[in-house]
Length: 292
Length: 332
Image (cartoon, rainbow over all chains, first blue to last red; front, top):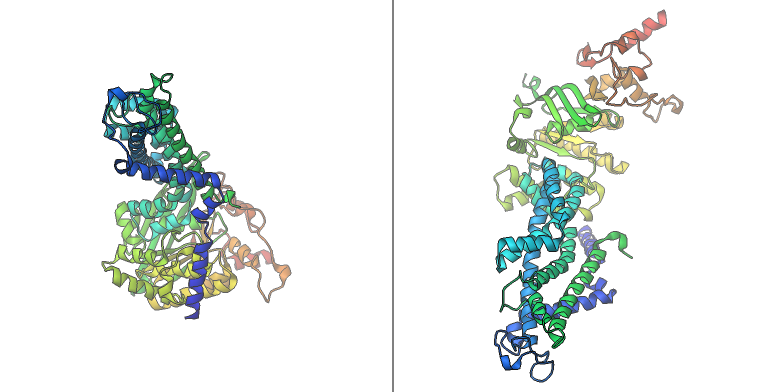
């Protein structure tokens, strides 16, 4: 009985001594601010229908391009729609787009990376394919795919996911290749596990942490790309509110009413910066070389 | 009579690798058999091919070209389709690795890993598998096995982890246990405990053991028969006492005299001169000949076959039996 309790105590202390995300963030004020900002934006985006003071599609041509102040806290856009409302709905669209895309991208990238590491015969062809995809700038790749697949949420998510996948595949392969060297991979085979069980329970679970961290770094990148496609008119079509297209709409009136483009661009900038800062903090947290 | 039918018989096993410098045979024309309930130790230096050979018995060396026959109760494992091998791995043949620290999946609890191994081979429910897992953990002498089921590998000591590995290997009552240096990474006191445990479990289960080791102390303690490997070949195979009392291959003599003993004179500790040959540039004839004090001209020309010197004692040396050679040499 006494051995039980002491063992449990050691187990507990081992768990407690593991670096905790929040404690780490407390020591990294920039990342903490980024986290708070992101949480606020995400909550605001989710609650946009409740929080938004106006209807995002309610045009009023007499109220076009009003400067901030009065009824319209951030002014109005080219169609006389409330800008704050448009931004809330825009953030909702852009964040959802970025999130769906990074999920798709990490599924594709991780599958390619793990398959390349597990089946050595596939490594050459798969990773050369990834290299070819990586040689295109992601904005060009996304543009080409979006143009090819046409307009719509589905095709946009596929285009963004596919352009996020190659670097994730690389990280996944590198991590998985080192996990493959571990003796427990042989040990798992020795108890008679099938390839798919080995990949899911042994390989994937042991490389999950670095891949997740990398995906969090990629999240900002994907949002930037999503906004860029929207700005270039390859995103969701008007009147859908999307941060990139809001910035594009305001561009023609940048001298007359600078607030439209500025507010949208600033919001994109802040979201992407926060994602990157938070991603960096995640990386530091999981990199033993950078700890204390 | 049934004892004479081997549990596993290896015939002409060759494991080759393609390298930049050409094809290398890590294991070259190896023949041996193990009867049910018997312990065969395979000894040799690092690089002698003993680990590759043990892995190739379960077809776990993916990039290798493996030829020959591995007959398990008369079934050739090398001709089986890949999915059929999974019934043997962990089911009828268990395996223990050298590094208990790295051979358990770090993200799964000990219990889950053992339960998984059981459910892969036996059609039992979760509860029955858990009960069996606790039972095998208890067999291996792990204190409070029920609590250990929920432990992750990093929460256990090296000796505990090796016990858990052994529990996992024994969970499906294998007929053959392959142990690749099971005690090398452990403290000396823990080593003795693990060896005791293996002996005890073998006595209870009747499983045969193939024990890969470079530790002749372990061999003396555990083995019924010993096969000595050098540069990918078996050079001598004999019952354990016969091998220690009357080695019939110069390499075995070298191994034995480079082993310190508590009552022996420490000055008689003699290392074997030279080192293992480069597998890409093996010497002609006998592979040990460049390091062999007994070598004659014939050794550099023809490779000696593994032949019976005494009943049950085989040696691959032109000069065997060595005692006769020595006395004859003395008379000249």
